[in-house]
Image (cartoon, rainbow, N blue to C red; front, side, top):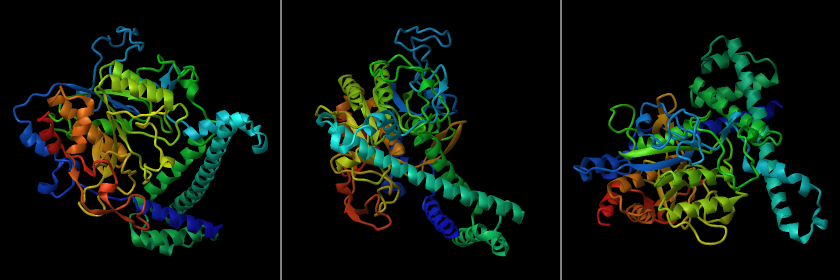
Length: 526
């Protein structure tokens, strides 16, 4: 057991120590030539191209986890429903949603708000296992064979994921509790390497953890920092075991809808803050944080109205909610929709496809994060949903899929976690250490294609502000044609432990990183 604990400690240490970076807030707004960081030249646009020009307001829907509507840098840029009277408990504009002042939540209801939810694979296993477990491979009717095989594959993946989560949770819990006990005995809440070297362990478990922490503090003496990250691993694995991968946990009754009625649209509540609004708040700040209040940070676009639509819990979003979120955005005037979320299973993809088709018919641009698995999206087995490909053939023409880049103009330009695809990912944009708004009028750094997508959304909004006659599909063309082309070999995302070099042009359709200055100059010619 002690050997297993030490092995687990070393593995967790490697995981934790591989996730530390530092960078200047707002680097992604800067210019590569002038500032020597691979930003998208937003500051250069405001310093020159936009002088003397007046933007018109553009409504951007952020379909996400929720938004802190009281944030000092966001409250002034929120969309407000002009036909709704706040707080009167009536659907004044007859759109089916009562008191939807700044947007709507499709994962809240009479019972409160859904915070934690399952992964999609958990829901599929829970809903289908009774039927498919009653069948055997030898006796499956031909009509059910394909479904049976798909279920078995999902069930196998679920079992593996659950087993890994349980193992990580148990090991991190042992290390955490043992270290907590040792710290109490040492009598110093911030013990040093010397403190642990002098500590006399009780039993094999403490002895094993002592060896592990000495190894850790020898390479990095920041004990509080290590403990914080260890706690993060513990909490994440605990969440997986008790909620995301727990077949007995299903919070949907909170919403109060008929979940299996896919045509149902008028459900939810007007609480767009929700219990987990950090992600959506951060995304919104990147797009449109107030540029004129001399506090916090600057968003990319200077005249956006953020429409908050809550469909993403801490877990996988549900197709019904995503479809309804898109339709709500379109029906209430959104010209751009940001989707910084995704999952690898979509049992009701057609209803999402139909909503996307509706958005396309209304000249709405959709911008989606490629995902953070470091995988090639051209491989069909690596699908991320939602996506632009319709189940009945064809694709959305005004849809942009975004990969994440960093600040160095070298082989590390592509973020190590970013998905990519020569044919399936359209552009890259900054997504490493992005500084933006957080709940409680705070600010902080986050990483992910979830941050890269709103960088592109903010730029798209800037185009539609200053050139309102340009159509959604044309905005996509402008963004792809105006990238900073990257003609160099880079380390392929997902291969950091055994680096593979590849031309950046093979990572996305455009072969580059979005550039605001180039895009705005090109837009002026349309």
